[in-house]
Image 1 (cartoon, helix red, strand yellow):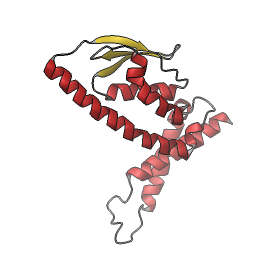
Image 2 (cartoon, helix red, strand yellow):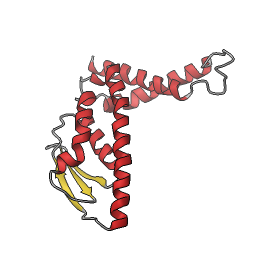
Image 3 (cartoon, helix red, strand yellow):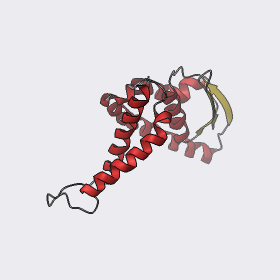
Image 4 (cartoon, helix red, strand yellow):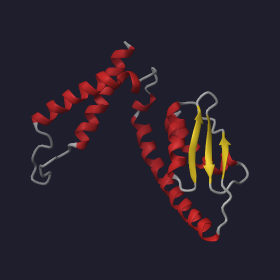
Length: 173
């Protein structure tokens, strides 16, 4: 039963992505034409079947289907706003530090207290996207991240990850 759920979930996700990427390809929405031809739908179903058969055991490793909730996807999209804000802020901070030479680089360990692989992955990628920080290593057993930081300060977990962890918990945990 678990394998069937994983296959069906992966199939629909792949089909959704395929249809989104081929939305109105070569057709005008204004003229009122159909968005997908029958050939595109059949090809999308064939590709989705192939993708589901190859990757369903990887994408659905547990019985946890919490990310199937559309509200979590909306929260994840809203998360891009504070992420973008922090990226802009960090760009100015890095530019200032490079110009003034006030750089004290180092590697710090943070303990974000996230429980899911998805949460840790989102946090590691968010930190890496933010200028001045780079995720160097992730300790899977302890859920700790090692971060290269351009200016080492006190309380690295709060300074680096505090702004992201609250948002990530809303959709990933």
